Image (cartoon, rainbow, N blue to C red):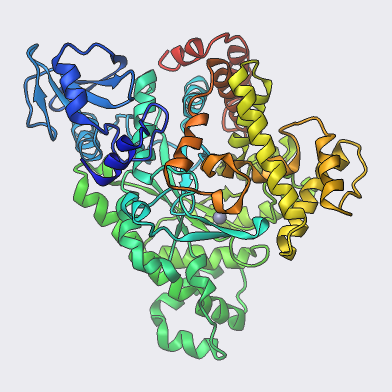
Length: 617
Ligand SMILES: [Zn+2]
């Protein structure tokens, strides 16, 4: 048994309530294999999952108690995958290990290159999509799959930042070698991978979730975005591990900021460029930018090039590694291809069209097709952009450049914008865009639990709310100026919107009294800002030291969310799906008629089974 599986099993952390931590979806194969040999009582056959492969038909099995999964091949052929066991009925069963999943991808794609069981870069995914992030849990997936099916629209159905939010290497986690991520608004560093799941586990879980509902029968291609892959800086040392963990991603976002943060532009930038960058490449970039209709200021150009060139070189090198890793593991063209996004919204200030043009020309000259680029538009997470005319002008300037490179615009921090904002984004780009959303789906979970009549959902909601109150109280009286300022901003916003006096910071007791007088609600800014760290907080405690806890205490907390009631799940699925319909409608990714029909269908569901039953049609 692998170290991670031993850690999970010996601490009673099973896939049924703690999925996607191990890369494997079977922690204890000897136990599950014994059950299967003994007739398979307690084992569910996911009938809709059936799919054809080169080696025969395969169906997904799941242990109803532990959540351990297996594949059953309708043939006697134990050599097809690893650790196969032939059963008396002539079939063969295999554990749902990470290694077997990678092999299955080849078997499925060799049989049918157009299969949509695995994430791909097919259809319009490289031009128009919605990025559905999993910042918190993976409980939103069935709703995402329902929305893709109802809207007949492929999306970036799985998206997450690695190693920030996902554990990039479970052995590093067990050894206590995970780095930390600064969260200035909380005044502390939180261990990376603060969601608790691993990148491979999540890649695995996303495929299985779709098979269970038969989503693949709809033949709608979907992608998995390894978001904000950090380039350079302190990440050089573990870039091979990052590449390895992301092999199932069909879409890579390159984030140059770690390398840029440590790049010093030399005083003589032009001289530096002359001696460090290939002359022919510089000439190519210049003429491409000019052809795009932008006039270059020589000095500014040299400065920008000297600033980004070291990062661009590393990006190209990383890109080669992503390509080689896929060529090594996967046998088909469909299984190897991946989309690229260049994130430049981390660069200081609003992005100028010149910067976008230079960056895209550089990528072109380096032979890297960029499907999406994310300039900075000055978005605040979860806040509408206040001026639609100004937004239109900003996007138009960027779009004039991007369309000449065949690149769509990625809107980062895209959650919580107004309908009019999304309409502008869609109209200017002709829906050649990606809206990246993530925090929204945590908020929707809060609303779902808040509205649930189930007692244990209510208890979880109250504890969750109390956790954010606790962090707000500590933050508002912290000696760290950023932490204090942010906490007071969140609290002031909540009190102001509730029509209460906001002058409550005379003492901790005064603030506590004011907050406790508010009826709990998921609509307060402090709840929104602090909520996502509750999932892996040891004991659910509002203590900095409890956050991002990768010991059993953190995972026991995580299990609470995966144990919510059917009512809570239905509320949540409806909230998530309806938000996706709203995005597709306003950006113009799906027609008004289709969105209206989907919304009507959604409103009619009384149970989650009913809703999920419709995914496969
Ligand atoms: Zn970004």
